[in-house]
Amino acid sequence: LGLGFNHIRMIENGSLSYVPNLRELHLENNRLTRIPMGLADMKYLQVVYLHSNNISRVDVNDFCPRGFGMKRSFYNGISLYGNPVNYWEVQPATFRCVGDRLAIHFGNYKK
Image (cartoon, rainbow, N blue to C red; front, side, top):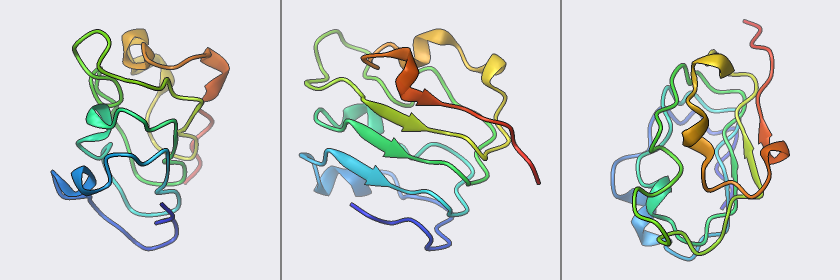
């Protein structure tokens, strides 16, 4: 689902539940300030592009469900570079449902 470059400020809670089989979500280059709620409930989501937004915080349950075995497909890619979030402030358990640590893309934030 390509929603990049649309000046989106937020994704309303529950909006993503209408696309339960989604595998790839493009939200890059918008104005998001937080990770959209509901990503953790998307069993088949594998790739999320969130780079170049205004996300300053990533919580431990933003991407992965709390229960074991709830996610059917591990993430192959999560891009968070170009956001004012500091990677050292994100708990390692936040990415417990990522298949490979190289799939997580943080980078320097330049305003």
